[in-house]
Length: 388
Ligand code: 3PG
Image (cartoon, protein in one colour):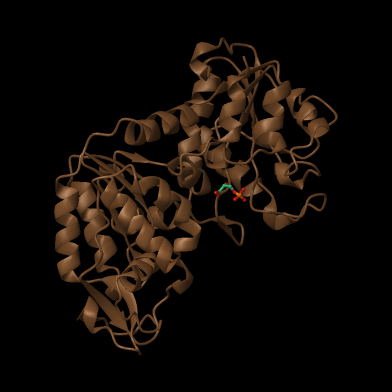
């Protein structure tokens, strides 16, 4: 795959697909992490003398009926400010080439307003391709989607390449997964085993320690025959959890199951946290976090790790009394010398909450794409860049 740095983009119109899909609440951008990550690519392209057209999706609007709440206008305003030049938002771009000079930037309105975008329609893809001399794929966060602006366009553009953000993500994730410094530890938290089954499956045979947390850990706790009371649990996946434990063991690895937990009797921000041994959970309890002994065991594992991959919180960290497990893990990652990667929406919220952003070796901009990469899947929008 060629990268943007290998092409002469001076005086060329580059169409850069970015993932500018940020949370917007009543017109206000509530997390600009993805926007900050996109800036170096734009600046590099401008410095090299290109005319820069940006495109992205935002949310999941109904195709053909543009709603203001899905408009990229707040993003255009943000970019204007960050780049110190007006970034025009262009709504009509499918049937005419956008007039843009070298050194200028414009943003195309939400590609998911276009009928055929999500279906990866060829005619639409050709229209995108016709807008530029070079298509730059830089949207790691959307690289798992084979859509017209991520995949189809790359079939038809005159030249294609990977942008610096995508390239950096692939290198960092490759470093963590392909030839990791050992011991390799993965932390997979979150609410449901079902949404992370494939990633657990793929990691269980790769890593030395697979730490499970959140609702996922409950299913593993139940698989060991313990009562989990009213906790979030997937009883239908008990056998899968047992199989994962066995797969990890067969591979010389381990899935450490919490020995103690914090419980409450209802999901509420004022619910007091009670520490219990994992075999003392009663019918009325809900497990909301790992307990202090488990924290000790897990932080010790992290201390010795060579590589750490983190996706998903260990407990209900939005309530402080049930955030101690996630906080301790975050601090252990921050203090570790391991090459560490964190990714996923909730994980990044935890990284921010506990102030460890500059202590993690690499923070991925991907949510679903990050997971699919961990699952070992080929990302279609990356694979298509190999066409020449
Ligand atoms: C994401 O936020 O994970 C990406 O931007 C992809 O969005 P999507 O799940 O709506 O395709």
